[in-house]
Length: 124
Image (cartoon, rainbow, N blue to C red):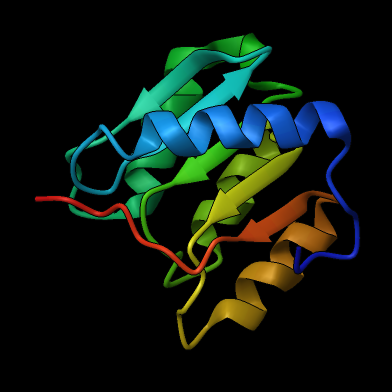
C-alpha cells in the first residue's frame, strides 16, 4: 500500500476481484469493479490511458466509487488522473515504473488508495 489513504476492507475485496479479472484480459487491460462485479473494462489499446477512458466511458455514472485494476504499471500519471476524475476510489497495479512517484502523487491528489502488487499480468 503506497498511497497516503489506505483502502477500506470493502475496497480491498473489490481490488482483489478486479486484479484477478484483469489477468484474463489482454494488452493494457483496465478493470473497474464494485461489489465484486466488473462495471467497466478497457483493453487492447496502444496505451493505458485510452483503456482507462474506455473503461470509465463504459461504466458511465457507475464509475464513481469503483476500484480499478491495471495489468501493468502506469508509465505516466495521466491514467491515474483520468480514473480520479471519473470517481475511482482505489487502484491496484504492479508498480515498477521509473515514474511510480508521479502515479502515487496523482492518487494522493485524488484521495485514492493505491496498492502495488509487484506482479504484472500484461499479455499480448
